[in-house]
Image (cartoon, rainbow, N blue to C red; front, side):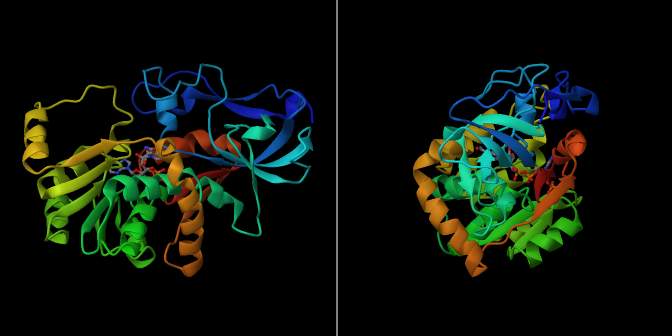
Length: 338
Ligand SMILES: NC(=O)c1ccc[n+]([C@@H]2O[C@H](COP(=O)([O-])OP(=O)(O)OC[C@H]3O[C@@H](n4cnc5c(N)ncnc54)[C@H](OP(=O)(O)O)[C@@H]3O)[C@@H](O)[C@H]2O)c1
């Protein structure tokens, strides 16, 4: 392999609001030869995730931004082409964090070997990877659903939301999903087995949500914010738990949130209803990892938990697919096949 063979998508400029294709640039990027302890990887699959919008911004956050001209960051599944690490040989398939590029050099210590005979390798980026773990740890640690309770989650066709609703049902709770459009809603109802699904684009969305939650909401797994939060908030029961996982409806906003200050109303309800609202980043729950690795594959094997992937071909199509992810154009876990 020569340096010219390594194609990567770099951050060309920082977006203002909605990203555009011009914020990205496809170029030939340098891929050094592997040193002792390293391997040369050919990237097979790239995960596209909402958090990447945050990495495009220089605003202070829980992780450092991607610099202008740097390859965009991301989780990947790759094949080992050359190894200078005793734990890997050419042909091995690994989980790495190599970003939006066709080849990369990685430290062997940071790789996890995948066995294609155990599960399709793409699941390491979705249901058996970071998003699935986010759902598992956030719901069970903070949400703590109990039999008979009502759990509500939006972005319910995606890898986090679909797992949240199905795990809630495994724990004996009612799962109410929220998604954009009838096609997604039907799939969530029929394939993921949610008890009710509401289309957030319906004009009477808030009324439909209230009707689907006659006993109120005990757990709201917050993935989106915005008007979904507005509809959920009055329905929260006393002692409701709200794991705040993501706010994708706001990721393209520039902090210019308009409207009256609702904080006094929210705080009054937090107090009078004894609400638990807790944000989290999945890596904080590393102690739950062994339980996740044991339970999640078993639930899939038993047919209790299903997943959907949305695989787009071609590295060059990653920017457009990513822009669409923030607007609900994906249908399932978004993955680029390089
Ligand atoms: N805290 C953590 O550690 C952590 C880790 C992973 C993911 N997350 C968060 O989890 C959430 C879901 O991630 P994912 O990977 O599963 O994404 P995803 O569901 O595959 O994609 C995002 C979905 O958000 C929905 N959406 C976008 N704008 C919306 C709006 N204005 N109102 C309502 N829904 C909207 C869209 O679905 P519809 O078409 O159904 O609207 C879109 O498909 C994101 O907020 C992400 O940032 C957090």
